[in-house]
Length: 179
Image 1 (cartoon, rainbow, N blue to C red):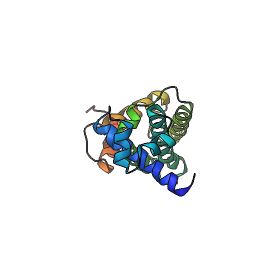
Image 2: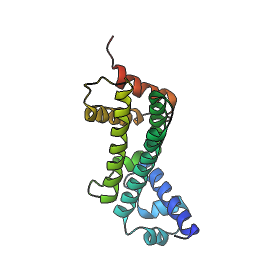
Image 3: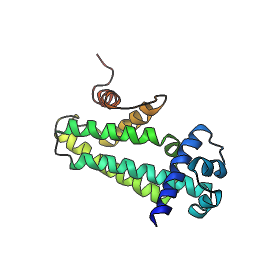
């Protein structure tokens, strides 16, 4: 894709996230206007609204994948790496609130990326268990599901996310609410 086409596609996707977050029923014409492109440009880049939403979802999950991929390669102690990855994932999820809540469950590309995120997270959870951050008998699938749910819940109703949110997610996951 030429650089100008890539720029206009990126502008359309970013505008779509903003516009659809404010008004889920917004038209492609409204998205085009917010992106500063002609409606025909949107139609050239995307076959329709569904194609735009699929692309948004796939890109959002690709950014999450890239954020969690760092966790496996991070040479820092596991808790530090986990905190960094959580902070990065919270930032991605905050930037893609509409796209991530309107995922096309049948889209093969998005499902493949979600599978990669799951595999990376599972690999890290093994590392975290080996480092003593998790009990030896912990059900790692359940830990991953709860971790992802905590991240998703953390995004709701907050304007910004950062280290404090990552700390809260990990503290809740690792220590719970018990005395």
